[in-house]
Length: 161
Picture 1 (cartoon, rainbow, N blue to C red):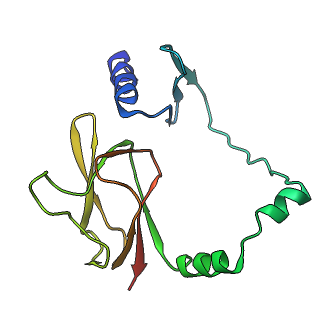
Picture 2: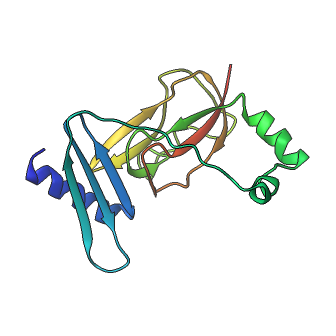
């Protein structure tokens, strides 16, 4: 990756409000972290083959009891289990409208088809249209207009048709 692109990425992270961004490609890995002070930490690591090993996490019995959902929470989770979560494919600024004087792309209750534009995400002065991956009804918008979003952050809940 070219130095200019790394500098642009650092600048974007500083402007976006994100505290940490990780970018992994086939032959390198970049982590950019912002600390409490004014310093920025940039770590660039060359790697030959990506290897990820998931480590199981253990909880104490007391924590397991506290995290057990109540009956209302179980019903809500059961309701949401059939919903599709549309997630952000990039980091940037989330916009529900194509421009300030236009209506939102979608509202709660709207029916969308696969490929319909749901929102735009601005990243490095480029507006990226985010399209629906499924046909269905918009159940919930999870992000406020004009707010920063992270990679893989849930944006919409859609009930498939």
